[in-house]
Image (tube, rainbow, N blue to C red):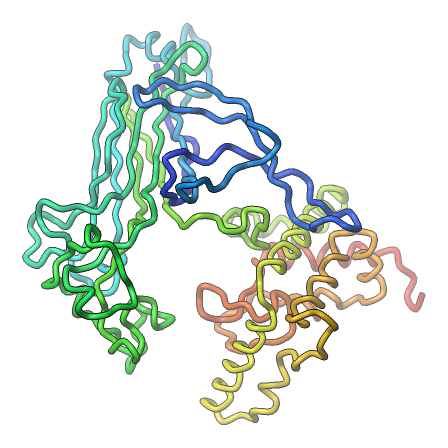
Length: 472
């Protein structure tokens, strides 16, 4: 009997792209940190699963030594697979892993007994107006023996009095398809393909503004919807649109009223049912990865690890019993910081951060000169370099992934981490010269690493100095 069932992965990200060809599979190789190297992460091609229109699934080896993220049609979408896993007992033997057609056979089941349900929604307009009429939802239900691609057609609720998407029309939110199991791939899977990355507007958009010249076929949303008349409440610090100006039409130049634009991003649930067991996973659709060779220094995985493994790095045994593993984790963090530095215009961010500090000082009546001095002054120009502060930062960060250099720095400057890395803080509005420099977090305050990352750096630095003779 089947005892448990789950979907792998439990959370997947799909990336928009207009190309009909999904992005090839790839993995990250070692950073190119040679003296004249790029300093970026190397994307290494890997075998990909190719899904045909009739559901046939086959493995394709890498084509060449490069990964093609774009072609003549545009970005290639990232199309994740969801695979059914579980644990079961056959003849008294307990097994755990992917549920295959053989497992179904053992319990008298077929793929027709497998039921999939995919529910996605775009709630951006609804988030602002709080009107159910502005919801855009799509649901598809498929049996495990149905292998044709099924579109996810986003529309307003049928009961909507003022629907954003008129009856008979829909916003494409992607599609789903069930691969046909075969001898090489007998597992139960579903593939999610995101939409193209288009924007849709109301029928009167071109009469209201010329700033968004969308094709006529993408202008069918209702002018009578609440989304087309929405205005943010700046006077009362409207939390629905914080930070302000998040929708087309929000600026004073545009009048402050929403133009009624909607994109084809969505997220939702993937549900599979086999007999009495049901498993769920979440899918999130995001924009294309414009810098696939530059990883963020704090990722979703870091955030989740911070939730469940934060305390482990505070145990002295974590560092002492895993010195090499800890050192590699620290180096990986500084490698990602270097990659993030390559993607940021520090000069522009520093100017913005300085302006925000000055605004904070004026609001609370504190000295403006002190607020301005928290960030970097205008740097001395470098010959032939337009962004002098950015270039200096990249040169410094280029040294840190070399553990020997970083360890020597820690030995010479015991408080280096505390002095130059911003700790996690709550509602601290002031930007300063600590890393990450001048970057805003999703909470509109200066960005910081996770608590686990910070505590790990502090504990590792302490271990590096453990055998250093004071004054040496």
